[in-house]
Image 1: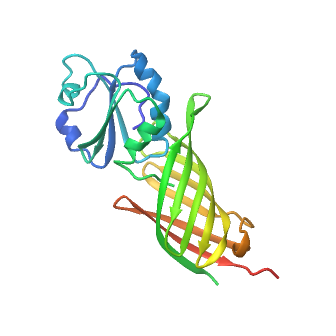
Image 2: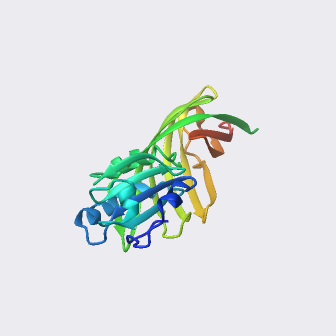
Image 3: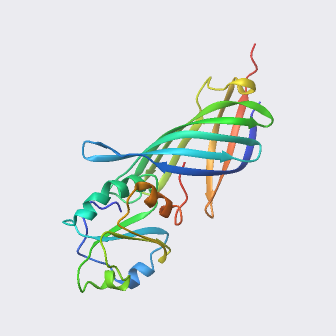
Length: 110
Length: 133
């Protein structure tokens, strides 16, 4: 899913661990300026990877999913292959950074 | 006569500055490919892509200039891609732009399939060359 906003309805860690295929979990908040700045970079890099699920989670103190991934800064992107963390980006500075991490979980389609 | 060439290829996708079009972001990528086997060639291209809010629904178009050798014949040609994914069902139309062949590949026509298995790319290229009259 290519969500436009961060969801406050978060899955459990067990549900994330059971995800099939490639996925990105993005922790952040709609009001976070670092998150807003990163959106075009993430969308740009993801446009070439339609098979990668993109799950945006509104994070905050005490929210269990973010704590289970030890998230400290927003946005944090966790790149998962079949539920296992393969790569992680914190406050990505370029679409290329995101694209290179994406290649670790999904081949380019072209 | 139709010939078939199959082999592996490597692809790098390099994102360029995103161009907002209304409320949508259409991604633009540079393609840098290396074909191996009977198609021994390098390719440079550009891709425009967009994924929707619906999981598994997306589309892309791309053009790439392929330069090298095809079954020993030297030249270049242009491939045109039109790929769609409709809620996970993928359809790719990928073929040679008519009359784009040069050198010993003048008169080339053909269709290509891309196969991705275990993270590796391979191609199947069904082609024919009409010799100049």
